[in-house]
Structures are given as structure tokens and as C-alpha cells.
Image (tube, rainbow, N blue to C red; front, side, top):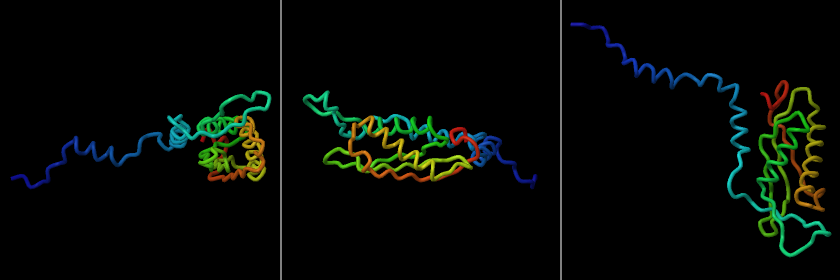
Length: 158
């Protein structure tokens, strides 16, 4: 009689190995994948009331989806500044369909003056809101900027 234990089935060993091993290269791309999923266009959206320019007034009202505002703002911030917006949320008034506040989370670059970056982001955010919504009260909208991570180099390439 053979008293040595039977080696595990090769398929079973392979399954156990794959379950325990991380996906090669996942650490390098995880942030970009998560960011891409977050910025993917979704159906629906919440309508925000836009103000019609006085010289173009007519019947009806114009609305801009919060998805349009979010994606436009993210693109503008990525193009202008050395940062990667990771979350942009809006506080909206359900009754009037107006924007009350903006909350932005981002990854910055090591060595950047983060207070100055936050000030620039607030200003750009207000400019984008004014451009898209024609909002004359745009300066009264609070824009909170939180730096949630700092990386060496370009945060978009991290």
C-alpha cells in the first residue's frame, strides 16, 4: 500500500494559484480604469435650469444635464491644471432645478501649491458654470475642493 498523500489535481492547483495571484499590471492601471468608469456617460441625468440670454429669450426653458456639466468641468480641469478630478458632485435644488454647490475631489501632483491649485479650480468651476448655465449668481455658489491624493509627476499618468 502506498501511504504517501495523493498530490492535488493539477486543475485544482491552477485554480488556487489564480485565485491567490493578483492580476499582472493591475496596480499600474487601477486608477485609470476606475476614473474611466466614473466618467463614462450614463443615461438620464438630472436637469439643471439654464438661463436664456436676454437677447435670445423665447418660450420654454433650457435645461443642461448634470452629466454634461460634470464631464465639461472634468475635461476643462484636466486640460488646464496638473491634476486628476476623481469625483465631482453637485448639490441641486429639486424644486427649482438650480445648482446650489459643487464638491470636487482630485489627485494633485507632488510639489504643487495645493491652496493655489484649489483657488484656480474654484475660479474655473465658476467660469464653466457661468458658460454652460448662464448663471448670473454663479459667484454665490460654494465650490469645495478636496485633494484626496498626491502623486509624483502627472496625476493622469499615475
